Every structure is written in C-alpha cells, then in structure tokens.
Length: 286
Image 1 (spheres, rainbow, N blue to C red):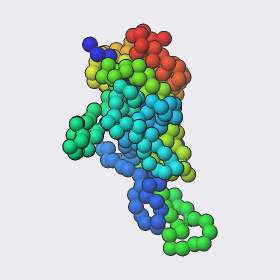
Image 2 (image 1 turned 90 degrees about the vertical axis):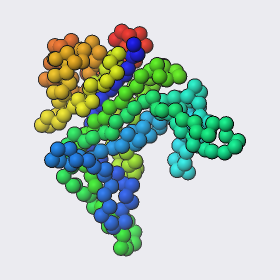
Image 3 (image 1 turned 135 degrees about the vertical axis):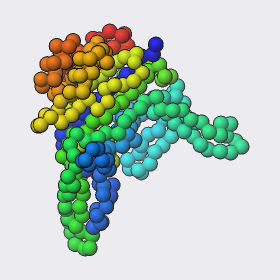
C-alpha cells in the first residue's frame, strides 16, 4: 500500500491583515471570510499558502524551480514552458497546466494535477469586524484617510501528499522543511508581517488514504487545544504510532494525555519535522 503524509498546522497568534484592497477611502472588504455556525471567521486561500511554499523553494535553490517570481517586476518567469515534473521541484509538487493551442504545439493541452494538496487556512477565532485607520504622509487629499480590516488570530490548515505520486519521492521532505519556514502568505503588503510558521503541528505518516487530522486544533480559552485529535487516538481511528505532535500544544494537558496514549510527542517543531522526514525515508521514527 502507498505511504501518505498529512500535517495540520496552527500558526502563532498575531494581527493579520490583507492590504490588496489598496485603501482609497472606500469601505472595500480586504479580509476573506466564511461563516461557520453562527460566527464569521477569516480565511487565507490555499493558493496564497502555496505561493509561500513556492517562495521557500525558490529561495532554497532557484535552479530547481521552473516558475520563479521577480519582485522588482512583479512577474513570473518560466524556464521551460513545456513544464517537467522530472526536472523541476515545483512542477512535480504543485502541478501545472499549459492550455496553449496551435499547430506547432504537439500537446495542445498539457497538464499535471498537483501532488501536494493544501486546504484553506481558517482562523481559530471569530472575526468581529476590527478595522484600523491610517493617514498617508505629506499633502492630504480626499483619499488620505484609509482603512484596513485586521484580525488578531491564529490560522489552521492541512496539507496532504502521497510521496510515490511524485517523480522524485524525496521531494516530500522539502515540503516539511517549507512548512517550518514559510513566510510570505496571504498577499500582505510589506507593512504587515504575519508569521505563518507552525506554533503547533500534528504530522501523520500512514497507509490510510484519508487524513482524519484536519481541524485538529481549537481555541481553548487563552491557549490552543486538540480535543478532536485526542478522541481519534482514544477510540483507535488513528493509530498513535502514526502521529508526531509538537509545539506549544505539547506543554498543555492535551500533550500529556497524548503522550500517555503512546503518541510521539516532542516540544520542538523542527525536531518533529526531522522525525517525520526520517519516518518517510525509513518507515521508522527517529
């Protein structure tokens, strides 16, 4: 059976804002939102997270990436317009689609489904409509005053990957590294810095094709808990041997309970990533 990699990440709590709306005195909403139950939550698209992962890979080794981003020109550059999952990390992980048509194009439509799946990131806290106001420097005019929606929250998202679906299965380890170092997510302007690295993480390496660990984390007072994950292990739906849990969640009662259930629990996120990489490579946790 195939080996599958799943990970659910919860970020640290910080002030998130998206300034794509370019404050022009309008009341344009700049944070994406969803309704969950009776409350509204903010969300970051999977595409924005994938952008952050691509940026990590480009900074790691631009020669191995087909589509690179030039921040000075605000443009993407392709090394090979025919794409190659064998030659380029991003074509292998994220997939591609070339819909060019013409007599000179042997493959009118060339596409590859992305092996890496990324969910939307959802805030742990409801959004109550916070708005920050500002004013531009220099001469004032009708558009001097601008507003921006802000949300002090943490975000949760999940990734899924089957290493054998890659042209080079060893590239799965790069995604784990990228998750621990991803930075520019959500399209934020430079005046907003939001840390998207994991504050807590649960990683599952398994032959089960279903993640089961999505939406594992929940705001519990001033901290974050994982009651759903704890229940999954207690009832046997997820084997303790398949899990690695790390980060601040370990220093809570949930961390203690998971440890008693024989889940691999480590305090450091980087230590957990290293253990998951070893598990992917050998089938045995480090």
